[in-house]
Length: 322
Image (cartoon, rainbow, N blue to C red; front, side, top):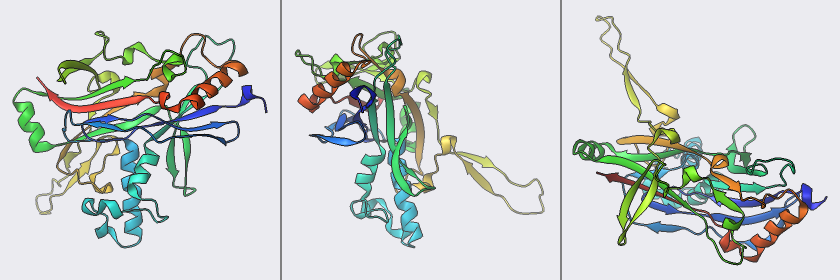
């Protein structure tokens, strides 16, 4: 098989933690039909206590909690699937919940040769994520360009008090890629679309004063990111028959957020969600799209030369602003 027909894969890892969350390209690099290269490094996680408003959770985090809780229910041990026993929680096949969350919140970026005549610098750049196939009962990668269902859970009483005081709740994002002068970093090959640059004043953004200077973040509460209040709504389904004496209520949830599905207790929270489109976010730099075997080989060599320079940092923040 010629190199031109072989995809080059890296892994983009996202982790949901309150306050700032940094994560990056976690290099399990492959060429062709899955032959693993010697480069294999862990994702770099940087956590800063810049803000701590509620909890930020990606859909993979919630899916992991849901799977573990289902397994405990299946084994009639549901009472053991609680937050205070987090460290010991695991699936039926022995995967600990922390590891499962990392698996399900992983994004894999795939570099392949693009159409040589194509003018699109996004051609030949696709994204996958790890997911459980319930029908086949296996975990596998599926193509998914969106970071689907990023959620923020904020204590309702705290939220109402602060919002009523005139503050606004914000979810922010700042995406950065390492750069270096000798041309082997990811930023020499890929670039962030300008509409995702928080330093561009034309984009929805807000600033936080931190370590002696203002830092800009994309405002994910803007409608561009499909932000919405996903808090479960109570609907009164009481009967009009006054003689029945029964009054019932049902809970409906935007985007299928069901509190009882998860190990963490979000029942007293306001819930907000947003979406990000990775395919829309990144593109090749001019002249760097691997539309020849030589260019694909160049990317492969750059990754193996210094995998630490092939990490994309996603820094999220949940906070209140004036």
